[in-house]
Amino acid sequence: MSAAAPGTSKAAHSDVAPKKKKGPGALATAYLVIYNVVMTAGWLVIAVGLVRAYLARGSYHGLYYSIEKPLNVCPLCHIPGIVPSSVVLTGFQVMSRVFLTWAVTHSVREVQSEDSVLLFVTAWTVTEIIRYSFYTFSLLNHLPYLIKWARYTFFIVLYPMGVTGELLTIYAALPYVQKTGLYSVTLPNKYNFSFDYYTFLILIMISYIPLFPQLYFHMIRQRKKVLGHVEDYSKVE
Amino acid sequence: MWHVEILDAKTKDKLCFLDKVEPNATIGEIKSMFHKSRECHLSGKSLKDEDVLQHLPVGTTATFYFRDLGAQISWVTVFLTEYTGPLVIYLMFYFRVPFIYAPKYDFTTSKHWVVHLACMCHSFHYVKRLLETLFVHRFSHGTMPLRNIFKNCTYYWGFAAWMAYYINHPLYTPPIYGEQQIRLALIIFLFCQIGNFSIHIALRNLRPPGSKTRKIPYPTKNPFTWIFLLVSCPNYTYELGSWLGFTVMTQCLPVAFFTLVGFIQMTVWAKGKHRSYLKEFRDYPPLRSPILPFIL
Image (cartoon, helix red, strand yellow):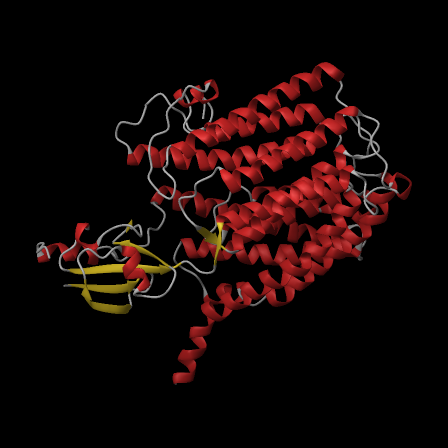
């Protein structure tokens, strides 16, 4: 039996220093504030464009064309943004936005006059205006409760609304994609490769089934966490 | 007699207190005093089953942290399963089993001889891997997490099916440069297969049977191992070469994708292995790169 110094057993207990949360520095904060203000403005432009066009024409028809340009640009601008939420979830959302604006609506002219396009555009517009104002105010440490509440409540309706619009739009595009063979590659070719955009779109639609509930319930859990404690306080009274 | 206190690595809860432990007890024996398959570490440094209690930098009261690794499966089982799949699946496409291609092609064979050659190469590759798993490799860890078998099999089986579908397709287009291209590709493929096997044998011979010792690999009399002068993980280098050969041989884009994805994964592994060599051996040869000489 060897007698080693009793002090050395302390080494085994070391580790666990409390983790300090590092906030962004002044320069990073400035960049983020500007970024979020610009994004809010971008989606406001779309919202205002929609309202004006509707008032001018008196009908929903063809409203897509009045906001086509900003609509195609805004989702792309999501890419350089750094937001304080999960990279995977945000990544998915950005990809699906870009996919729907460019690879579906912009590419298949025939669906551009569909009502479903308006459905998801409206849902996205309202969601994004609230979301980016939320980030802006949070960065400035002056977050009105109303914005926080709106961000974590409106999605309950807006999210299913957007998804419905997206799915209906993809579904409407299917016959045209099949007829024209858009973005598809057939055999034989020297790369021995094939891709069927029609089947791909169907698989995308099917993927909504596992993905949408996960994202939706994630938001619901976030809502309970963020807004929940307020209800507890009011119960104490 | 020594005291050993065992805490949960994550929650720091006291799991167990053993107060009559022999100083020459090994970690493995302490683990079985504890009856679960767990990983043991001492304040950050992972311990091995062979480590002896009194040789560790602790006092007569030692505190160990145990982490439950979850359901485990043996490496051998995983390798055998993930490699048998591609072998069988590719052959199903090669023999044009029903429900894959149009019914008039069922059980027909391709008229292009490169398709037969590709089948032989692909099958040879996976038979080699299976035999190596059974007779050549000496594994450091016995087991890996159970979920890995699902992940790995999806990867190997999925890609095998995707590649095999196009290579054995009735509308397959053989390589543009014909016989020249196929011959060159075959030479590259065979060269790298032999290379890969040579490295596996060299690595095996570094380690006596049943042991888990680690040594720096060096070139041997076999010229295929001379690449150790420039690379830490030449088995991956040769593997990349084999699949590049197969890509050129079949001129098939899905094969190119498979090669690319495999290359990315192997680079990650090679960099990790290279780093742990550098950490463990102070006299590690400085000229070596992880996977590609001088480049990566």
